Image (cartoon, rainbow, N blue to C red):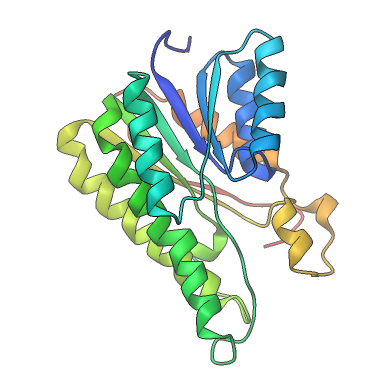
Length: 237
């Protein structure tokens, strides 16, 4: 499907991992992109790389847990008169630990980043969506299955799944489609901070998830892909 000329696709967490792979894949396909992340230097460099290859890209530095940043983002989009074909909500964090031993502040941070930030962002973005726009949540296998020491993370992802299913029903009359992508473990920088001894080369790769996002974006307008699950034949969850 040939990308539209005007509408934009907004991607959060656009400079690393799944967000970076999605950005590069959609830029190569000709989509107009709005990149959101916390690192101004990474956003600037990535946008430059896209510009020199003929792509159309805008970027905005924001912490999605910060109400001021979200309000500024909304004002910025309005000032540029941009309309959104899609929002790919990828930004998130992971923390591990036994459920009753993990500090409550870690629980709060997971919920704030993985659940409440997407809610707050969509409250800002809702006025900018075109007809048949799409909201694509990058969820996780942990949004469907629980694992020891991943309970807090899974709780945030189960809640994100509930949010997506609710929005799919509530926004359908407004011709806004909602999809969730549930990948098994993906080789991303998220694992750098966890210190787990996993075979990362045999995990799913960020590009695998990016293909799933592109597939959802290319679905016919009357089709809502509720869920896309990506599993690994190597057996890694």
